[in-house]
Image 1: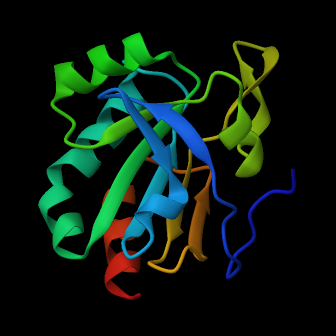
Image 2: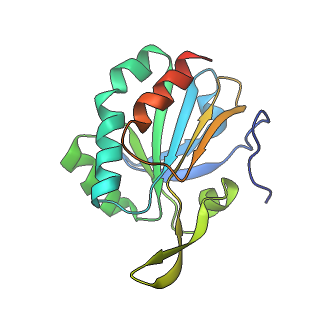
Image 3: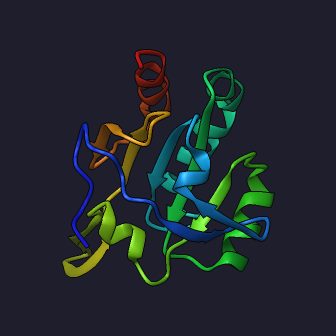
Length: 155
Protein backbone atom coordinates (compact mmCIF):
# COMPACT_ATOMS: atom_id res chain seq x y z
CA UNK A 1 0.00 0.00 0.00
CA UNK A 2 1.47 3.40 -0.94
CA UNK A 3 2.00 5.95 1.80
CA UNK A 4 0.12 9.22 2.22
CA UNK A 5 1.10 12.39 0.34
CA UNK A 6 0.56 16.04 1.16
CA UNK A 7 -2.42 17.68 -0.56
CA UNK A 8 -3.80 14.31 -1.67
CA UNK A 9 -6.73 12.34 -0.22
CA UNK A 10 -5.80 9.88 2.51
CA UNK A 11 -7.03 6.36 1.70
CA UNK A 12 -9.86 5.17 3.92
CA UNK A 13 -8.74 2.92 6.74
CA UNK A 14 -10.35 0.98 9.54
CA UNK A 15 -8.69 0.44 12.91
CA UNK A 16 -9.55 -0.80 16.41
CA UNK A 17 -9.56 1.91 19.07
CA UNK A 18 -10.30 2.43 22.74
CA UNK A 19 -13.89 2.57 23.91
CA UNK A 20 -14.62 -0.56 21.84
CA UNK A 21 -14.60 1.63 18.75
CA UNK A 22 -13.70 0.94 15.16
CA UNK A 23 -12.35 4.10 13.56
CA UNK A 24 -13.01 4.57 9.85
CA UNK A 25 -11.55 7.65 8.20
CA UNK A 26 -14.52 7.97 5.83
CA UNK A 27 -16.85 8.20 8.87
CA UNK A 28 -14.94 11.31 9.99
CA UNK A 29 -15.45 13.29 6.76
CA UNK A 30 -16.84 16.75 7.55
CA UNK A 31 -14.40 17.07 10.46
CA UNK A 32 -10.69 17.79 10.54
CA UNK A 33 -8.65 14.87 11.85
CA UNK A 34 -5.34 15.04 13.71
CA UNK A 35 -3.62 11.66 13.86
CA UNK A 36 -0.52 11.54 16.00
CA UNK A 37 1.79 8.53 16.10
CA UNK A 38 3.85 7.93 19.22
CA UNK A 39 6.26 5.15 20.25
CA UNK A 40 4.81 3.73 23.50
CA UNK A 41 2.13 4.22 26.15
CA UNK A 42 3.21 5.50 29.58
CA UNK A 43 6.64 6.76 28.53
CA UNK A 44 7.60 10.35 29.39
CA UNK A 45 7.48 11.99 25.94
CA UNK A 46 4.38 10.09 24.85
CA UNK A 47 2.56 10.95 28.07
CA UNK A 48 3.41 14.65 27.75
CA UNK A 49 2.33 14.71 24.12
CA UNK A 50 -1.03 13.14 24.96
CA UNK A 51 -1.53 15.54 27.87
CA UNK A 52 -0.75 18.52 25.61
CA UNK A 53 -3.42 17.43 23.11
CA UNK A 54 -5.81 16.71 26.01
CA UNK A 55 -5.28 20.18 27.47
CA UNK A 56 -6.17 21.81 24.12
CA UNK A 57 -9.07 19.49 23.30
CA UNK A 58 -11.75 22.17 23.76
CA UNK A 59 -9.97 24.41 21.24
CA UNK A 60 -9.66 21.55 18.74
CA UNK A 61 -13.35 20.66 19.19
CA UNK A 62 -14.35 24.29 18.54
CA UNK A 63 -12.57 23.89 15.18
CA UNK A 64 -14.45 20.64 14.37
CA UNK A 65 -11.28 18.62 14.84
CA UNK A 66 -10.98 15.03 16.03
CA UNK A 67 -7.74 13.87 17.70
CA UNK A 68 -6.56 10.26 17.43
CA UNK A 69 -3.41 8.83 18.98
CA UNK A 70 -1.77 5.76 17.43
CA UNK A 71 0.87 3.36 18.69
CA UNK A 72 1.66 -0.33 18.38
CA UNK A 73 0.47 -0.98 21.95
CA UNK A 74 -2.57 -3.20 22.48
CA UNK A 75 -6.05 -1.97 23.36
CA UNK A 76 -5.78 -2.98 27.03
CA UNK A 77 -2.61 -0.87 27.47
CA UNK A 78 -4.31 1.97 25.56
CA UNK A 79 -7.41 1.82 27.78
CA UNK A 80 -5.24 2.05 30.90
CA UNK A 81 -3.11 4.88 29.46
CA UNK A 82 -6.19 6.80 28.34
CA UNK A 83 -7.94 6.41 31.72
CA UNK A 84 -4.85 7.26 33.78
CA UNK A 85 -4.33 10.56 31.96
CA UNK A 86 -8.00 11.31 31.23
CA UNK A 87 -7.51 11.60 27.48
CA UNK A 88 -10.83 12.71 25.94
CA UNK A 89 -9.81 11.27 22.56
CA UNK A 90 -9.43 7.68 21.43
CA UNK A 91 -6.21 5.73 20.95
CA UNK A 92 -5.79 3.34 18.03
CA UNK A 93 -3.96 0.05 18.43
CA UNK A 94 -1.80 -0.62 15.36
CA UNK A 95 -0.15 -3.91 16.32
CA UNK A 96 0.00 -5.05 12.69
CA UNK A 97 1.54 -1.67 11.70
CA UNK A 98 -0.99 -1.12 8.89
CA UNK A 99 -1.46 2.55 9.78
CA UNK A 100 2.21 3.00 10.62
CA UNK A 101 3.04 1.76 7.12
CA UNK A 102 0.33 3.84 5.43
CA UNK A 103 1.76 6.98 7.08
CA UNK A 104 5.37 5.74 6.75
CA UNK A 105 6.33 6.29 10.39
CA UNK A 106 8.39 3.13 11.07
CA UNK A 107 12.03 4.18 11.00
CA UNK A 108 15.42 2.85 12.04
CA UNK A 109 16.15 4.17 15.53
CA UNK A 110 18.99 3.85 18.01
CA UNK A 111 18.83 3.42 21.77
CA UNK A 112 21.91 2.79 23.88
CA UNK A 113 23.86 1.93 20.74
CA UNK A 114 21.33 -0.69 19.58
CA UNK A 115 19.44 -0.26 16.34
CA UNK A 116 15.80 -1.21 15.98
CA UNK A 117 12.73 -0.37 13.91
CA UNK A 118 10.40 1.93 15.84
CA UNK A 119 7.72 4.58 15.49
CA UNK A 120 9.05 8.00 14.53
CA UNK A 121 6.92 10.48 16.50
CA UNK A 122 4.79 12.05 13.74
CA UNK A 123 1.52 13.97 13.36
CA UNK A 124 -0.79 14.37 10.38
CA UNK A 125 -3.57 16.88 9.75
CA UNK A 126 -6.38 15.73 7.46
CA UNK A 127 -8.98 18.29 6.40
CA UNK A 128 -12.78 17.91 6.33
CA UNK A 129 -12.60 16.47 2.80
CA UNK A 130 -10.10 13.76 3.75
CA UNK A 131 -7.07 15.49 2.22
CA UNK A 132 -3.71 15.49 4.02
CA UNK A 133 -2.90 19.17 4.63
CA UNK A 134 0.08 19.06 7.01
CA UNK A 135 2.56 16.59 8.44
CA UNK A 136 5.15 16.78 11.15
CA UNK A 137 7.84 14.10 11.34
CA UNK A 138 10.50 13.62 13.99
CA UNK A 139 8.32 15.65 16.35
CA UNK A 140 9.75 17.39 19.40
CA UNK A 141 6.95 17.30 21.99
CA UNK A 142 7.42 20.74 23.55
CA UNK A 143 5.17 23.23 21.76
CA UNK A 144 3.96 20.65 19.21
CA UNK A 145 0.25 20.61 20.15
CA UNK A 146 0.16 24.42 19.84
CA UNK A 147 1.78 24.22 16.40
CA UNK A 148 -0.84 21.68 15.27
CA UNK A 149 -3.63 23.85 16.67
CA UNK A 150 -2.35 26.84 14.68
CA UNK A 151 -2.29 24.71 11.52
CA UNK A 152 -5.94 23.69 12.10
CA UNK A 153 -6.90 27.36 12.56
CA UNK A 154 -5.22 28.13 9.21
CA UNK A 155 -7.34 25.61 7.27
